[in-house]
Length: 258
Ligand code: ADP
Ligand code: MG
Image (tube, rainbow, N blue to C red; front, top):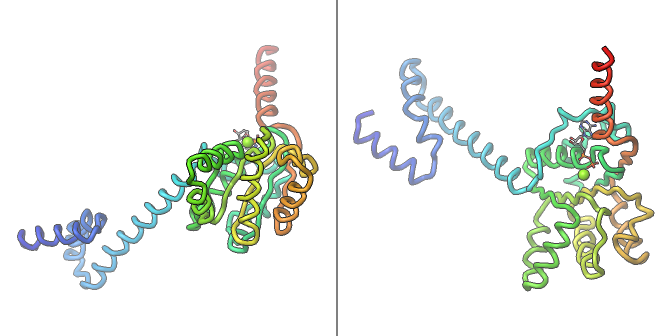
């Protein structure tokens, strides 16, 4: 293409915000000329690159917005070490239908049993399917809710949470909350009932959630809604971390003996 046309084309691609087409059109045009490619085939290839780049950027943005503390995937998860979490069932959940059906998921188990790892890997899979996800700890969420209330922007925060397809609340039960904090958390959970999905991890069995929500009535009302349509996994067993460190120690001791 003659230089003035190239300059105008570049300006247009910039104005139309098509950065991938801007970066790639010359190279693809040379290839098309070499191969005698039809005009429409060239244009199709060029637009495909833009579409692919946009969807990759959107996915990366969804993953950033979800706020995972660390990226953990199922490919590094050893299902044989987590008998409470059947692989087939979990990989089915990673396909996301339950979120479309507004169902919930609870991972219950002791410290180090892989709850945060599994919750993160599920959340990442859902981000890749185009779902809006947010990962928070229960304590972090309560703090955010209390601060928003004090600053008279609770409604705005609740609206933001309401837009999420999946809210992941990690570590419910490690800390108990003030009455007001527990009520705010209850409100978020109750609002999502049959409308939006929740994934909750807890070290406490359901029978002990009363200590978090202070009051049997509120706890019963919450559990009733939460578990109505819910995939529940009990991940009891030894701590993975503990087991790995014992294994490492044993290997070291074995070497010493030799
Ligand atoms: P929890 O949230 O239940 O306390 P985590 O998910 O934080 O446990 O797991 C503790 C550590 O052990 C993490 O580094 C995690 O990646 C690892 N881990 C736990 N379970 C498994 C597993 N089944 N396969 C691989 N790594 C695991
Ligand atoms: Mg955890």
